[in-house]
Image (tube, rainbow, N blue to C red; front, side, top):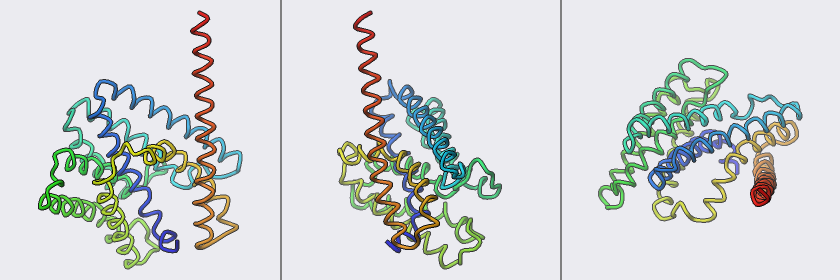
Length: 274
């Protein structure tokens, strides 16, 4: 838990971006006809959640910009980039995605702003697309090609993050040694995820459930972080935040499902009467 306490900010959001981008590419290939309708629906679902949690933070007297909310702006932007990229280049959309997020990470690092930030975490959108191409073309299913795929993947991550962690870093108060350790920790986490994804299908029910709750988890963890920061610290702080995030997210997800079912039921009754 102490390791998680030190490195979670460097790993978790980049991993979130990586899996999101990879999942969107899979969705496009599985349902090209309904892809844009699905993407627009997801985009507005995120906006609704965003607004709800902003109001909740204001009620609790917590800064709306705290705990990674700027990254959600980048996440919403990712839906727009995915849609535009697939419209323009279809199956080669990953080229635009990689170029855009690499440029984005450099620009927001050099010119910080209060609306878009988290440059290295946002590079995950580019890496997810690159990894999908490696998988889709079966480049990493053969032993030799698999090794090359992992090497290329690691090289991309290292090159993408080196300017952030070694050259002045986005954390000027953190030592160079800590910056290098964070880089290595992030790299190790992503490599482990790559290994697991080769053997676990994306339709696995637990992954689907986590995927449906993931954004709720992201929003709710920021609230618990702000509430518990003045009260707890260290390993206990991280553990309590994680447990409360999982429990609260589950309850909110259940509530949303029940509301959705009731709305659909009321709609069905009205349609039946008409």
